[in-house]
Length: 393
Image 1 (tube, rainbow, N blue to C red):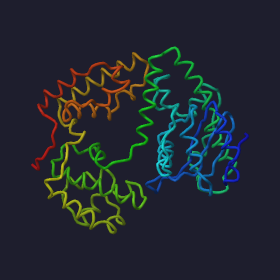
Image 2: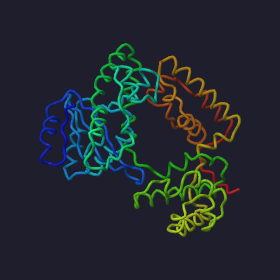
Image 3: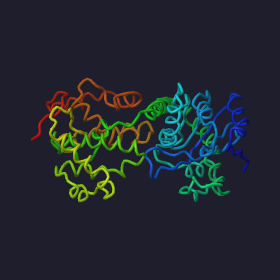
Image 4: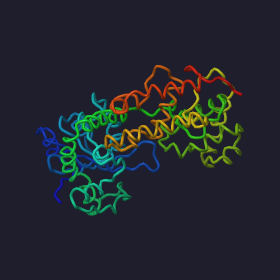
């Protein structure tokens, strides 16, 4: 396999020339480390530009800003597979460098595209390459240590294989979608929406709304959940540790529900002993303050939908309707009717009258048609207007 390793600015000339030569396509992948950090640590950036493969050592001292700028400003299709974490890295670096663009204009994710071509939303790259090209990829280096230098021959071969076949599958998918203009249009819309989502910065204000087990909590307990989510976000960003290292979601909800806050209760609920020792007083003060602060705005969470039998029945009907529509269009139903999308619709109908839910926007709205009947049934069952729940009972 032919490839060029970039380990210094002096070696960047052929890469920058390839970027500036008005390429037909760029395919990319990343290898990174994130087991013990909040922010992903980029180790290797693989690029295939019109068949030329470049392996950029992101741990070396080189001008990554130039490379990221060229990638996000490329006019040609920029192809990846299962690119959510890759794009988080790219958009994060683009933001860090103050670039005017945060993501490639013509971003194309083969895994997303497969949901429209094959009605399969979770297919791996190895499966696609074997199905369409008859080639079996060696995935033995998937869990490799990408911080190690020098990289082994096996690691380098693995890195190259992650980008050299993407364009061929991209061409096959485009050929198939030419026969299905509706699906092709829906895919373009979804890829644009995905790109925008990758630029969003994680917010504790939305995290707490999505936590399981919060549907039965009263406002006082929800204030604690919200406050602890905010504290966790601040600490993990500052200390660069994963959210789960500080307090796992299940533990956070368990703490709020119990309502007992001392070092013993933190450890009993599942907070790591080292975290309890270092941050225990801060966690306790934050929880107690939120518990007493009735002025702190708090909404019921998505999980509240699951506590109402009749609402669950409406949600199930909506799910079945959306699955049927997805089947008619040959699109993976997970992309149309995931738990997140269903609960978002129910929640929006219950608490945000006049606001369109995610499945009532864009290509999903075009495919599903009006959902006003489901919305009116939800509102009739709830008989609520959009407001915060201020009851501590």
